[in-house]
Length: 294
Image (cartoon, rainbow, N blue to C red; front, side, top):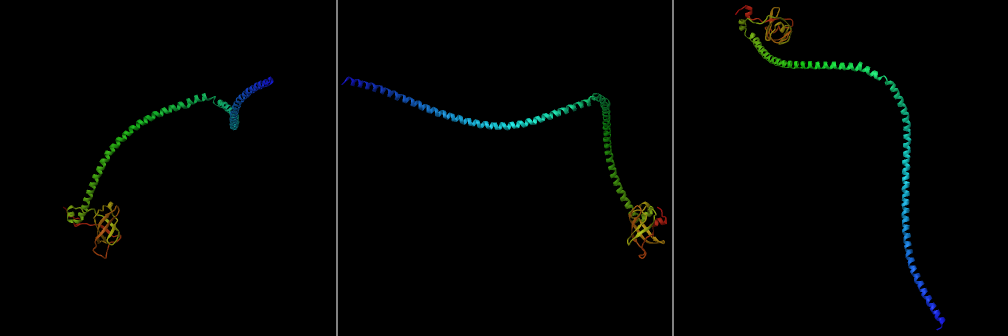
């Protein structure tokens, strides 16, 4: 084989070796660049995600800022309205302050004589009132003392009155009992006075002689114009006469102060009954007529 061929073969071999090394280096570089590319891609995706998150946060912050701005605008409007009100109040306060200062000056002028008035008032009114109050307090104390004494006397008099009232009630009851007994005895006496003429003849008590007139007359009763004030007694008997003739005998059953009611007991002649203006006299027993003594 020729030298040129050998040289060519050697050159080719050298070139092959160099090319193989270059291929290996290129392949190795391509692997590194791919890894770096993938890392860059992943990094870019990560940055993109972060950028999107940041953009969303930016939008949220922007929205929140818009809301805060709206709220602050409303609050600012309210504050401005409050400021306007406060300014109006300030203006009114200034006017009121001036008015109050003027009134205070007028009041100071009005009360500058107050110490003298107060001193005169104390001397002319307060001291006089205190003296009057002291005097009335002393008088009230005296009145209460006197009232206590009077109340004690009243209590003692009440006790005395209660005792006297009990005595009076007892005496009144005793008087009632005695009056009842007297009435019973008088009734018995009135009854027996006219039932026992023989006893009356011995006693010589036929009652008072009373002259009367008939006020009115009915079939069985009549009224006389004499009563208790004239001495008429219950169960007393009267003889009714007309022109001196006896026409009836009546018995007193009810006595008033000025008149008395009688029942007709005996009528000698039924054709001649008692009537108005007939005369009447207490019935007399034979003892009274004959003058019989005991």
